[in-house]
Image 1: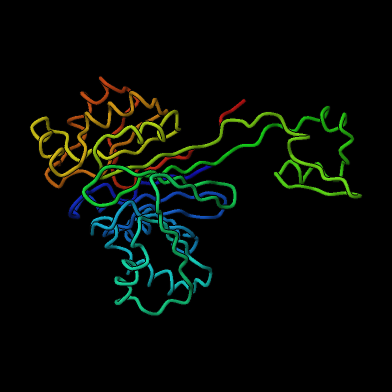
Image 2: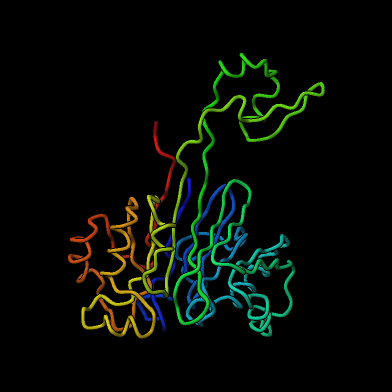
Amino acid sequence: MLDVCLLGTGGMMPLPYRKLTSLMTRFNGSSILIDCGEGTQIAIKEKGWSFKPIDIICFTHYHADHISGLPGLLLTMGNAERKEPLIMIGPRGLERVVNALRIIAPELPFPIEFMEISGMEETFSFNGFRIEAFHVNHNVPCYGYSIRIPRAGKFQLERAMEQNVPRQAWNRLQKGELVEIDGILYTPEMVLGPERKGISLTYCTDTRPVPMIVKYAENVDLFICEGMYGEKEKEAKAVEYKHMTFREAALLAKKAQPKELWLTHYSPSLVKAEEFMEGVREIFPRAMAGKDLKSTVLTFQKE
């Protein structure tokens, strides 16, 4: 299962009732953070989650409202006696930007591994899940992210027996490992059926609507998308500054057909997001206005 929490839903500047942009997920003992706006540490504490298991931090881009909370978070992680490496993923310039911010957080007891995205699309594989980065359309290099947890096919006893796969190899093969016994190589495909539907989440913000978003959000369990402006009169401003309106996010969801849409990254001028949701749900009924600490648990589909 994948635990999901919107830590902050604000864009541009924090407000007393809305922290800046950040999303945190937890899977299999690891935590993934996407963006780290001002107030991220406070939100993690309010949620009751821990800083120490954060293994990966992804950045959509390097505007301050998406990265200004990083130096303090790194210091807190260091004070928690973390020793394990921390992976960071982001557009080109990641190492330069982070090291500049670390002028105020120079000494850390753990190393940072930088993975800079160089193309329009890039996939990073980790223990049991993938992070897929895809280029979007903002006024600086910016990426959306999908987190995907694949699910292997069911163990098929008859196939294992027919192919004389030794019983001692079954458990490891079910985990996706290759097993060699007496000079014979056994593969997971010999005992598993077709891959089953896994868990998927797509997150994008600070962008105009582009086909790449639909591609990565298609049929996902949860699509979290920027809704900078709810007001119709702000449409021209969204175009000018390369952001999205509630309506544009809903139209993307209508094409992609995720199980659920959450809006996030609101303009400071947008006080009550729910006031604009009726029009959003007319386009895509399974839409919700995100709010700080909004959470869910994504699980594998029951069979």
